[in-house]
Amino acid sequence: MKPTNTAPPFSQSKHVPGPASDEERRGLLSEGDIEHETSEELIPPQSNFTRRRITIGAVTIIVLLLGAVAGPALYSAVVPSRKPHEDFDNRRLRSNGTHYFKKTALIVSIDGLRADYLDRGLTPHLLAISKEGLRAKSMRPIFPTLTFPNHWALMTGLYAESHGIVANNFWDPRTGEEFHYNRIEYSWNASWWSGEPMWETAETAGLITANLMWPGPPKTSLGTSPTYFVPWRDKVPLKEKHDQIMEWIDLPLEERPQLIMAYEPSLDQAGHAAGPNSELVNRVLKNVDQFAKDIHDSLEARNLTDIVDIVFVSDHGMTDTSDPEWIYIDDILGDGFHQIEHEDGWPSMGIRFTSNVNESHYLEVLQKAAKASEGKFDVFTHETMPQRYHFAHNERIAPIYVVPRLGYALTNHFENGSGMSKGNHGYDNDHPAMHAMFVAHGTFPSLIKSLHQSRSEANIFARRLFNANKGWHSTSDNTYVMDTFPNVEIYNLMMKLLGIEKYAASTNGTKGFWDNYF
Image 1 (spheres, rainbow, N blue to C red):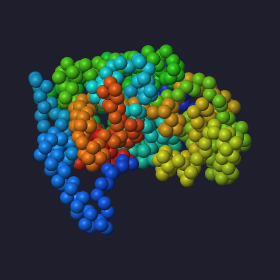
Image 2 (cartoon, rainbow, N blue to C red; image 1 turned 135 degrees about the vertical axis):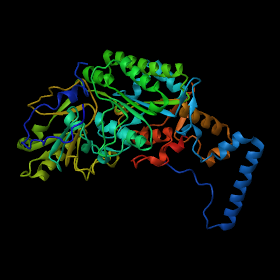
Image 3 (cartoon, helix red, strand yellow; image 1 turned 120 degrees about the horizontal axis):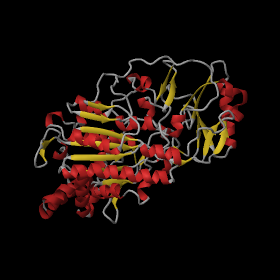
Image 4 (cartoon, helix red, strand yellow; image 1 turned 90 degrees about the vertical axis):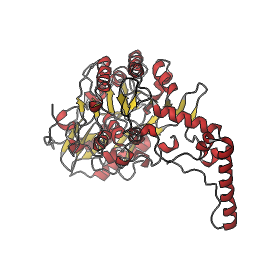
């Protein structure tokens, strides 16, 4: 099915109290039950010229002596090359012993895999992969911690206010239309999606790309599409997805994609249906862990683990909402509740009142109620939104946002909590329960571990000079664990792995972030 170029206008009728999208509460797309810091400055200020000359001379002599005495290995640890590493040259052909390959990167999103799920003892294969490669303590999603905003953040390296997908469902006051994540005539309309996804950058750089159900449009507003595109279908067996990935890997060189993106929602669906602490979640967690193993084993059987980098990510975490404390918005607003024209952003509530209403009055009412609640919920405007949310500078973001804290949920007496799932997300992206996972394997984790080892063995001067290994560490079992980092850094990682950084679009990621690790 091809994307629709235009979306029908949204009805401007006044708000009629009713349940929010049941699909959004049950689980995305489910039809079933189920500042990067600079290195420490070692050279004194220029005001003391003589002292500065002596220091520079000493630094030079020590570096030269280190190189002469300790040899090339130590010298490379002290003065790392600024040339791109040959592992990231996408033009160089690599042999697995039987066929030639170009540098390839695979990114797989397992929706709703909370970072600490990896500590349950149910994911031996992901942990084994991370021991051979690396993992992060967690990955911080963007706010709101919802599926569509975060999958587009992973693709573009942009916050919601920049890429425009500010919720799973929302209204655009400029066009008068409403975005619905689960209606193809809207979600496939490229005009909603700002930013440049990694597959568009890769295609522009001349690479072949493949998209296996990753949330987002099949084409950008410029008309660029992945070379291969498999649209969304629910309940697709994991084996079928594995086989599709391997089918692309096994294509002839001139047809084979170098960037493959794949998406799997079953864990998120289980989390919504039964809650994050349920047996269902644990069972599905084992299934997706086996899925990760099957992909890794298939690459290993093809002798491709030094050619294909795999990055496993998730979009957000999950929290138990089986018995929340309810906040009745209609009790707070009184008659003003019936003057709401649009609601966005479940489980938060982005509110737009009708034009004839004194919005300031109801904002004050909500703010007083939030203060009296003593921490149950917050009320923000574009001006008061926490800066760390990066969720203010877009007209699609409602002027008033009511954000419940974990343990609480918004409702009204008409809904009375109906349709609330047992697990949910969308809450504060700083809370560990909302954090996503990051596990990687392939050439680049091996390179990082090698650099870490070299830097660790260098003398204390070298470690101080280059701020070695800042932001990560290895555990007692030799698993390399990065500190928590924001998911807007993933786009630039994929650009580096594919060797196409010079084609990369501007992002909200931190310039030089990955240099801290490479």
